[in-house]
Each structure stands twice: as structure tokens, then as C-alpha cells.
Image (cartoon, rainbow, N blue to C red):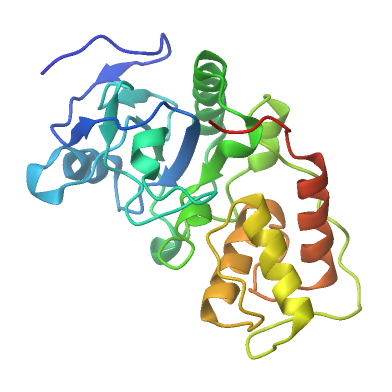
Length: 253
């Protein structure tokens, strides 16, 4: 059914039937890429009943903003995911799909017109809902074992300059001790504890296992984009420490 757009930036309404009742107030913004060969294919899938997926918004390459689900409704975009111990991310979040074919199909850069529109939409949503900066997240942040999007080419620094999201300068690449798959011990447990403290869903086991590697890779895709390899080097750890130290202080209800 048609509905009034929630943002004045919306250019097109394309209602999706795939949504339900929210179970919590909105306090997160989640960014995705579509990962399909065309915008038309992505919008069609997000409207298909049998696909059982949707998003509140889709931003096309030319910057056109399409709204598919009212913000008051729970869109089905996050899937199996968690952040700060919360597993029903869909109930707490607004989901934005950004048209890009993704890692499996060449992964081109995000066009400038598209990013201008994404930043403006995100800024408007964050202001309207009072979303905390560190709760503007990538799909890969909340589902690191399953998802890579929107990926390391997504210009989080441009979003931050627009007042959206939590970001610090990447610590410089340097030598020193690092941790990788197969390592174990108290330092690995300390790394896992830091990642969990920031919000990632990770068990503190002291073993640098596949889950830990995936979470480190997701962290790098968002916050240390210059090298994404799943290895916790000094730059990765120092960047994580700086994020924890500068994180907004308000508690989430």
C-alpha cells in the first residue's frame, strides 16, 4: 500500500510487502550494498514476497532515493545479526541499501552523486531519531560471519564529515606483534574483549579462531580500510583502542 515518505529527500516510493511490527525503538542505522547486477534487479527482489527481504531505503547510483518500507515498520534487512548483545537488529534499526554489485561482481567505487545522497539521507535520519554516532553501522559489523557489505570501498570518512557515524584516523601501519588465525592466549582474549566492548558479537575464548578472524576483518572494512586481511596488527588494535576511548558516552536504553 502507498504511504507518505518519511524523509523529504525521497524521490520515489516503491512499497515492499516485506515488513512487520517493530519490537523496540529505533536507535540504529544499518548500511548495506545491494550486491546485485542492477538497481532494477535489487528493487524487484526487495519487493518480492517470496524473497522475504526488504529495506527502508534504496539509494541508486545517480543519487535517487527510493523508500520501500515506512520507518515505523520493521524491515527485513539485517538477518541473523547482533550488536551490543542485541540480536533483533531489524526491530531497532533503519536499513539503507546502496546500489553496488559488490565484491562478487567487480565491486566498483561508489559514485559521488550516490554518496552525496546517502550522506544527506543518513544525516537526516540520525537527526530525526537521535541515533548515536557509534550505532551507524555496516551490515558486516553486525553479521561478520555472513556479510562483507558495504565493504572497504565505502567512504565512511565522507559520512563522518557530514556528521554521520563514529570514526577516528587509522593508526599508521607499523611493525610489532600481531595476532592471526591459530594464535591463542591472554592477549587474544584481550583483543576479543575490546571488540566485544565496542559492540561486536564475539566470544572471549582466548583462541584466534575463524570467528575472531571474521570479526577483525569486519572491523577493518569499516575502521581500518587501508588493509583488510583479518590479521590483528598494531594499526588495527590501536585504531580499535582509539574508537573505544572516543565512543559517545550515552547508554542505550
